[in-house]
Amino acid sequence: MVTSSVPRLVVAAPSSGSGKTTVATGLMAAFAARGLAVSPHKVGPDYIDPGYHALASGRVGRNLDAYLCGPELVAPLFLHGARGCDIAVVEGVMGMFDGAAGEGELASTAHVAKLLRAPVVLVVDASSQSRSVAALVHGFASWDPEVRVGGVILNKVASDRHEALLREALESAGVPVFGVLRRVAQVDTPSRHLGLVPVAERRAEAVDAVAAMAEQVRAGCDLDGLVSLARGAGALPCAAWDAAEALAFSPPPPLPVPSPGGSALWTPHRQVIAIAGGPAFTFSYAEHAELLTAAGAEVVPFDPLRDERLPDGTAGLVIGGGFPEVYAAELSANEPLRKAVSALAETGAPVAAECAGLLYLCRELDGQPMCGVLDASARMEERLTLGYRDAVAVSDSSLAVAGTRMRGHEFHRTVVEPGAGDAAAWGVRVPRRRLEGFVQRGVHASYLHTHWASQPGVARRFVERCRTS
Image: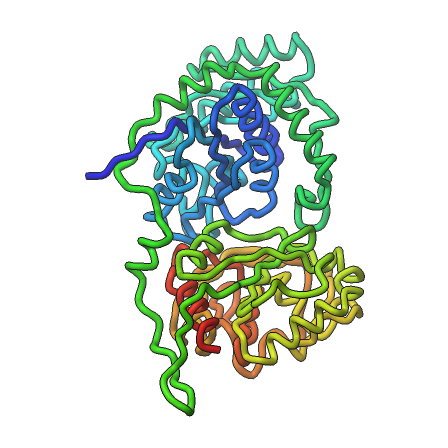
C-alpha cells in the first residue's frame, strides 16, 4: 500500500466569523517566515480565501471539497498540493460540523479532518464569554470521537484578566491552549456582497493585512507547539493525485467528427487555451489548468481588463468566476477584446464559461455592453443564490456529452435572462428542478462552478475539441 505523510493542521471554529481566516493565514505566513515550505488549503468551494493563503505561503492555494470531488479525492488532492512541503495548514469552512445541506457531515471541516487524519485547532471567539468557553470546547472536542481536537486558539480576548479567566476554565476541558489573540484592527479585511475582497483587487493592502496576521499569530501563538502537533499526524494510505494519471483513467472522449474532405485533422503542436484572470476573474481551481496542460494544451493567462486581444494562437477559452459586476464599465470599455471573444466563439472554438464568465458572454451586464456571444442580459439583484448542486449535462458540448453527471456550486447575486438557451447546459435538481445555462456552437456557459478533478475527461474533451474545431 502506498502511504504518504505531511505534517498538517486543520483550523476550525464553532461558527463563521470566529477568526479562522486570520489564524490560518497568519499561521501560513508565520511558518513561511521561519523558512518552512507551507502548503495552503481551504475546505469547501471558496475561491477568495485561497488568494490570501497564496500570498501568505508563496504557493498556490488549493481547495478540498468532499462534495464537488467526492471524499475519495480529498486526501490525494491534498497530497498533490503538499508535495515537497514541510507543513500544511487547512482552513475550515463555517462551523466545524457544518456541511452540505441535508447531507450530514459531508464536506464539513470535521469530515475533511477525518479524511486527512489531521489534528484540529479550534479557533474560539472569546469576546463575550469566560468560564462558558470550557463547555463550548468540551462539546466540540467530544461530539465526534473520530475528530481529534488537538488544541485551542482564543481570539478577540479583551485583556490579561480575561485571558486568565479563559485559561483557568479551559484547564478542566483538558484541551491545550496554543494561542491567545487580541482584537487588532489592521488585520480586518474588507468585505462586500460575496465576502472578502480578493487579493488581486487590493494587492498592497492585502500584503499589509497578511503581514499583520502573521505578526499577531507569531506574537500570540505557540508556533513550536503547533508544529509538533502537526508532525503528530500519521501517514495517509494513498498516493498523491496526478493530472496525467487522472486523465489516463478517465473515459476517452468520442472520436472527432471527420471533415467533409477526409479524416479529422490532429495537429502535433500544443493547443493554446487562454484562461481569463486579473481582478475581474479571480475564481479558478488550479487543477483545471493542470488537467488542460496534461491533456496537451498550452495554458496562457490573460486579463480582460487590460489585454485588448486574446493570446496568440488561442484555440480555446476558459472564463471562470469573479466579479465582472464590479468591473462592468471597464470590461465594456475594452471593446477590442470583447469583439475578439465574440469572433472566437463565432468560429465554433470551445469556450467554457462559469458564473462571471457567463455574465461576460451576455449581451449586457447592468446595461453595459458585454461580448454578445449569448442572446441574454444580466443584472445585479439583492437575493443571494448559494449552494451545492447536483447536475446532469443536457446537451452535448465542448465539455461533456449529454448525460454526464457532475456536482457544482452556485454563488452569485446576479440573474441572467433567459436562464437557459434553446440547448441548455445543465439540468439541476436542487433547490428546484430547472434547466440552466447555454450550449451553442463550442460555447458552454453556466452559473455552475464545477471541479474538473471529479471528471477529468471534461478537460481532455475540451482540448480535443480545440484540436478539431
